[in-house]
Length: 263
Length: 156
Image (cartoon, each protein chain N blue to C red):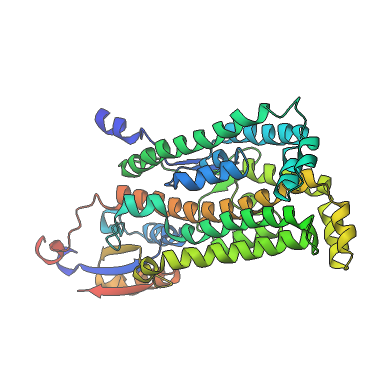
């Protein structure tokens, strides 16, 4: 009995379910995670479910990048206006950027390699926890199958909605707030409005280049992460149910051969 | 009963409905010992680690789209400041073009694997076997079908 209960608490879990959030560890490609950290420091960690580190890095990125004017300098450099790039950069902030940027990429790569090992071992644990439904004072959460395309569409309509649908409150709330902030300060919608009406020059002039460059990464990250998360949470649902069925409905004396001859 | 026992074999997808079906049977007097559920978790003979560490099913076709979409959108918005179409249109064109290119690239790279992996829309994930007296077989079958059994067969 002791041994049994010892075995029933898994050493490595791939699934955590609370009333307001789901966290899943699954196999990921380290280079893809490193890529997201390069696109926007912190995003690699958000995919990995390491939210505190992810938010720390994502907030760091905005504060330092904005003050040092990295994005603005990027635009000037890529378009060959090097003098303007030098002009734009604030040397009081700029050197704070480099080491943390590289750390974010390196750390998310390293973490992915470690977490992949844990994911394989966790999947082989014989006894996972019994979790399918969590009811709390402020929310509720459960595992089920969801159509990935639906989550994809909601994320494309507004970053964060796909995550809210999946009950990943942390990333969902962040994406929603971050999108609104970037869209507002970049004047993206005004630019879109003017451009669509044919006033392309005015549309370009109204944009704030420093803020505009934050948005493409946020937009693509939101639909990518939401889609992958749906696929993985569907898998987690199946895994949990399979474990439950095995534990509950395989211990019986029923064997096909017994049907006629044990009476 | 033993001499008269029969088996009802059915197939399901993993779903909450499956648990409802089993629960209904138990409420209706079927003992837990009369039920066996076999999740088919060794499907397709895939090499689990190496196949999934690089791409797990549906994901791989979005990797390229998201990566190239971001790159081209950032570059489009950047060069848009000096191009005639402006940053908004260039950014959007970059996003669409990059996503399409990434998707096609992934499709091309994974063409062979996808052919291998093509799955039917609905597939059996759990086999449920119930031992019961023949007089109850019809009722049990109806319960299973009502909760989304993909197929039910009798063994008697």
